[in-house]
Image (cartoon, rainbow over all chains, first blue to last red; front, side, top):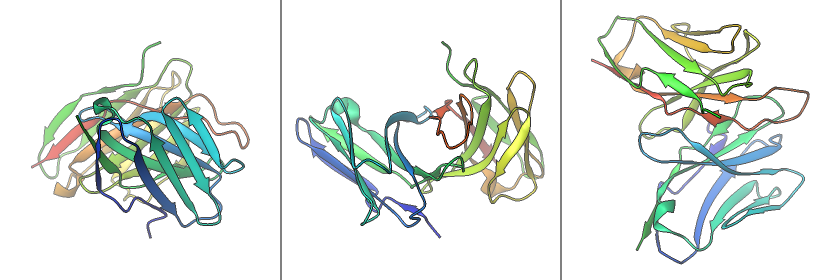
Length: 111
Length: 116
């Protein structure tokens, strides 16, 4: 039973446009959500997070939106840059229990 | 500050052998978690150690084990290797675990294990 789902395995976006990566979860007890970015041959890098008490968190070009009623979160990257091309993992957590990851979405930003 | 380091970076083993992977967390971090990443799968949680004690364990067979030392360094061991154990094994460290406070995990580069 997959508790965190990233239904789009890949996404291609033109440089300068907005990238929107989506993530759905099934466990309403999750209270913390994170996005990690992973380049080949490297470990995942923490990007941005959001607590369940908020519906938006912004950090530079990256914004995460949380819709608790729909159990959905999304990561917006504006403007997209070629260096953003990577695999993005959504993760969720309840208290201090282990992170639960989605399978990732491969973003390709085309110059 | 140095990041999370993992050794070795690459490893080739044959079925039936055992393997030990090492992880050195960021200085001052006391929690270490291990994950397995296989093609087409997300990161699957193996186990977490805090202050030399296993706090959480994922849904993996007993062939997978780990430990943490007093300096917070951690090792994981896989015995009787199977072809399906071929994967990227990632280690992540975080500062502390305190009440309901969530600490961000920082990942190492991983050890890529190939079982032939």
